[in-house]
Image (cartoon, rainbow, N blue to C red; front, side):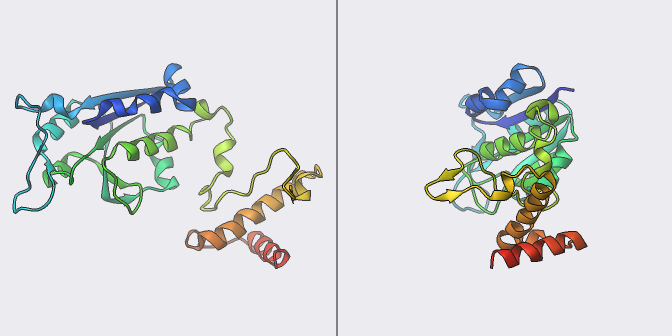
Length: 239
């Protein structure tokens, strides 16, 4: 399956470097991902390709006009239409997994002070990547694309990689170590050096639980008896 993304934007070239690098670039080159860009300015009706105007009622900034944006959305290939906006639902790994089941995703990227409200009737979903404001939706679109495509085995190459990452099972990832064994007086935990796979599994699970409990307690809703015991044991060892 070729997963198709379509970005609706006034800055189509902003995606050039993103699409040419690393795993995303290889996936595009290999035909596993298709990425289209639709320039909203191509649907402007005036000689200056104007896509924004002053808001009715006054106020700071400019607002994206409904005509060019809606025309661009209608020109996009079939797929779920996502409006990137600070007013949308919070983007999470669970949402990424849901979107990863879609073959075609249309990402509507705004600029200026926002969209004319009537544009919202032409999208299926509104998503925010966080409680902060960006200059436009393009960076947010890239975040969605990367988080979605890396869930696919055909992109990462290792089907187990996404299974133990942060936010899988609503837990943060465990600490990772590589060479050298000693770095400026800080050693790799002994359990990772002994070759006992079950001990490593239990340590990693305990570390995920401890890290989540300390850094993101809001993610933990309920724990199994084994997880509760691992968490209590790990917290005792850490003092």
